[in-house]
Figure 1: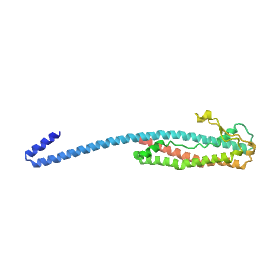
Figure 2: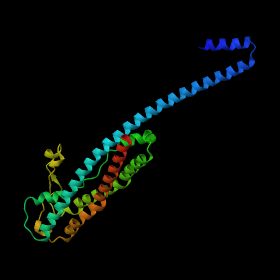
Figure 3: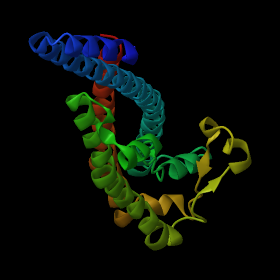
Figure 4: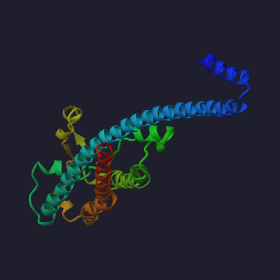
Length: 253
């Protein structure tokens, strides 16, 4: 091909037709430039296809991870409901001088469920360390960033505060009122958390009904759980569902 163009230029020069030679040279330069632009365009197209495939993979991974997080949050919500229900049962017995029965030891155990909220951080941390801008949709990218920042800097510290309340009670409140802190059926529930059945045996059940310190703690615990755990759970669920909807719309326009 190059030899072909050289022969044309030589023939034009040999013929002494300078005007036609100049026009031809300009045309040849134009063709070279078009070729370069086409090559750049193809390279850009291939690069964009690669980025689109990577973005699709990342969004699918986020979708799967967030769906799993939702399942986990729903399980945590059930544990919190179980704990609040146990508190209601215990207060009913203690405040109304109802007799002790053996099932109450499990309700005493369930009052101490912390059910910390968890999100899988691996995909977010991996993408953040590489290139979070791989997600081209600004709204999705910002919402994902806000979700994990909210979890790391608000939810986790709040969860820790609630866990500290339970831990403090185990040291400063329960030691004189119960035989031990949290006896569990660990062999049964280690592979199936739905079988979790804790228990705490009171030293003197009748005296707990007149124990203002313990009753104050028990009555306050559900409210503390609302502000430190359950409100965050609701916020996380709302944000995750919104992001999942946005990802689905992005992948399936």
